[in-house]
Length: 424
Image (cartoon, rainbow, N blue to C red):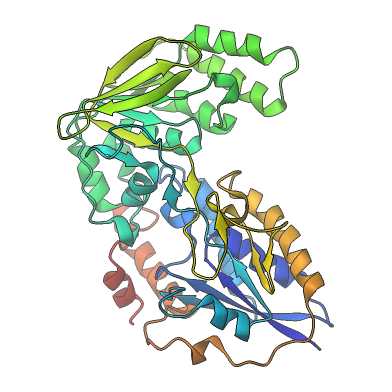
């Protein structure tokens, strides 16, 4: 019975769904050994460090990941970095196939003057900071201003705005990083503007996220009804299903009876940022009304851009326009790519499942004679690899630490602390 060895680089949703697709394709004539390589000491990718902490239901997909990891032939090699601990060429040599599932972790830039001022940052920094990502724990986020501007028209922008505008005690029963909760409780931010370059009909929000906004108990949510009415007119009589759902949800927000809370989220559309101004730090964002010559500005002390992500390049893997160069998921030789690294930052977590399944079908079709070229453990020289057993110890420790606080878990934020919890 042929047994093939596959390495998956990246332990986020795309990586796990690729592993699941391979497991589901097994038969009496075809078996897989799957080794998942992850740079961080913890798996689950954006499910751990990207999903908003006040949306815990989305994180329950981690139960699926644990079932995948419990299948025979699956091994986790976390705290192992491609490039320093092993190379793509070594993986290509030892495995019948290598699957790149590293996602997209670098925030895209606006490309305007003032973007590098203190107080201007990407959601790619802000989101992992409040989600306990070890690489971002030491960032200082200055929340001493009254007004923050979030530039973007997708769910990440909405998450950022909502987290900034929540009454901070609402985060106490979540797995938000302790340092972030402390900062939010000291925050002076009371007004958050979500600014979109195009009209509401082009927004990339999803309707469930929009429908949750009026349920916020301590935050006003404001949309201008004329903005939504004009967008409905522009969308025509037969808009796409998702566009109609979004516009219906936005209209409900625009028509909702006004509330009078201390904190406010305001949506503005058809506004293109052209400059960020300030003497030594952010003080103002200048906008041009999209499609006109009208210029206006918003005084603020914090600007967070959520306009998309790009993949981080790996040596030996071709990149172009923020993605791995590929044809339907094939990269070259025995290398494949799935998820955001393949298609860019689009879709929701579940989108990665069908995407990975399609690419794994190609991988299976391409298989030839199984290799016998040793094992990944022949290459990794350090003794601080986080295995699935180590991760289960870390996971249980975090859950146990959260229980007396009424949290689903209290995440360790320091790499050394994580390794200590795993008893490494």
